[in-house]
Amino acid sequence: MSDPRPVCLITGASAGIGAACAELAAKRGYDLLLTYLSDGTGAEATRAMAEAAGARVVLVQADVGKPDDIDRIYATLDAEFGRIDALVNNAGAIDSIARLTEMDHARLTRIFAVNVIGAMLVAKGAVQRMEEQGDGGAIVNVSSAAARLGSGGQFVDYAATKGAIDTFTKGLSDEVAPGGIRVNAVRPGIIETDIHGKAGAPDRAGELGPMTPMRRAGSAAEVAASVLYLMSDDASYITGAFLDVSGGR
Image (cartoon, rainbow, N blue to C red; front, top):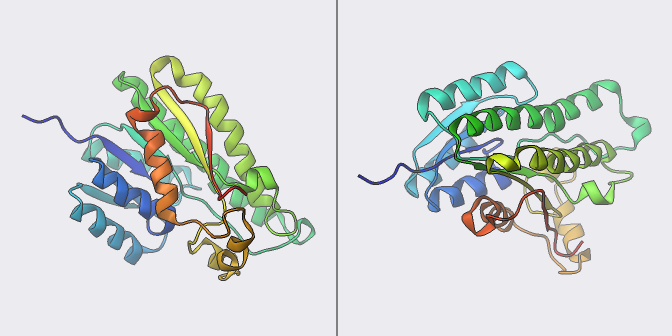
């Protein structure tokens, strides 16, 4: 009897980087629990791609900014799979382009609830299960080049959340390394996804991509390849690391 496929949880998997990670993880032999916020059509399309690659896929509609929804994600994972081997902590929120003086408490509370508190609580659930299983695991947090660049005049709130994720990645990696759990982060730069449209600048990737040293925007598939590398045994001695997928920016 063959060994069961490892299980990967990917948050925010209805489009973009999350969907690309799901497709590649399925091709690399993972079964998947995928979460999405509101794009059910996109989530079903991701499920179809992953199932075509041989994965068993379970979808959960959830807002990681709400603790009860995170509890429901893990209740479903426990019932459907009974274990977790990898987490891609990808779900994130962004708002329209603005200066700090135009941002209010509601905007800041929402973006930090999803991008920081939600990501930390999702990681908590994974760590609890990985430690109980006793055979290690891999967590990849999706940060951003904005954590280094600051995004002044555009998204200082988003950049600040990703700076927090960088610090969290390093601290958690040290905390759980003795148990064989590796925690790393990817920092995408200008990537062709719908996140730019959500911020009110759908042409942003096309406009800024040529300004990077590599003279182009990146693709979600290129980010996914980096995520799957950090999840893999090829990265077995890598933890607390940050892989910039930013075309040199």
